[in-house]
Image 1: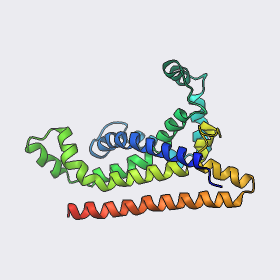
Image 2 (image 1 turned 60 degrees about the horizontal axis):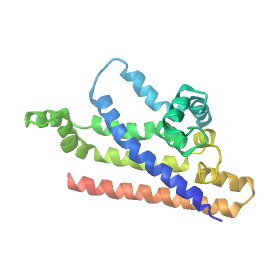
Image 3 (image 1 turned 90 degrees about the vertical axis):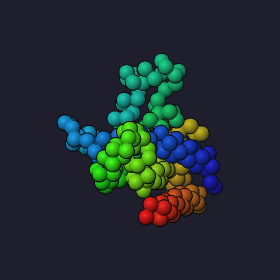
Image 4 (image 1 turned 180 degrees about the vertical axis):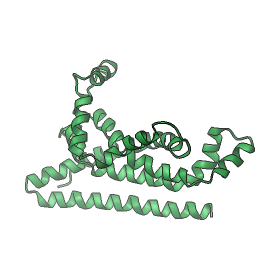
Length: 223
């Protein structure tokens, strides 16, 4: 039996994470690609840290940081009247953090591949830094942005450890499809687990196929 509530929650989490994180990743990746400043290596290491940390370790630290007794948890509760732990709000905040390298790194590489002369030519034509970003850099870096969108969306759908640590397993609130699959396996419901796993594979494959299709079209447009 398909857990449609868990699937819809996962899609909602992946969509919100992608919409919020990719613009922030553009703003972070651009200076990482173009600028030279003290502490750049440290910042790049911090961005990449979720790639190498075990999900349960990252989840533990996020759970501690989001706890109702923590300064962050208390501040958030005072401002919104809601908690971060065991809630969709906390899942979204955690998702933004553990997906950071999947969004930043492809965009950073794309910006880094843009010839410096292209930016300088845009400045000579009177374009401001923001208009240069919008009209010159982003079109050239678009394959990297598309890659960030696909990786962020797909990785959010499949994340298990951090989601379970921060959100727990609350129906209609924090139970994602990955957690639901685990529950089905624990309950020896192999058919239900197989159906949901197959659907995740289909969604991920569709996302990757769409990425390649859009990349080819963008390449033809700017070829």
